[in-house]
Length: 156
Image (cartoon, rainbow, N blue to C red):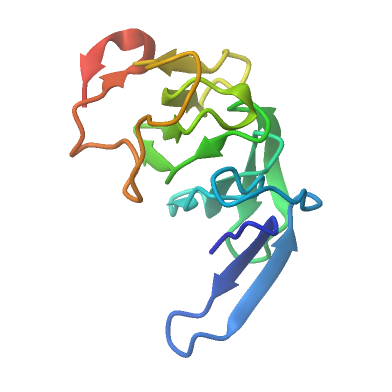
């Protein structure tokens, strides 16, 4: 679980107790439309034992699934203070969507290939240069969505 105070919690599935807590970055007070905190639901790569989350500064972190200690990143994935939504991991690529124009970010689908972190972030389906609206949803961009798959141009 991640929250707008930039805290990340892992809960025991059996009894709901906190397994670990990680404070990714200091909180920066925002407002209801642009909370300036972790908004995106993290995603898990069980095969690597990593949970990925995006901090308020837009950096993507990979936290150890057992301890919560960072073991990947941080790498810039989205603009700082943007309002990004649920992360999805498909074939080694993390996807998220951005809405509302928070932090000056353009609404659209953003993705990063985790197999090659030196590659730049791919932005696709950019909607507008400012103002409200945009792409959002707690399920994020994933297999059920009709979004483009980064530089490969294929649908997932």
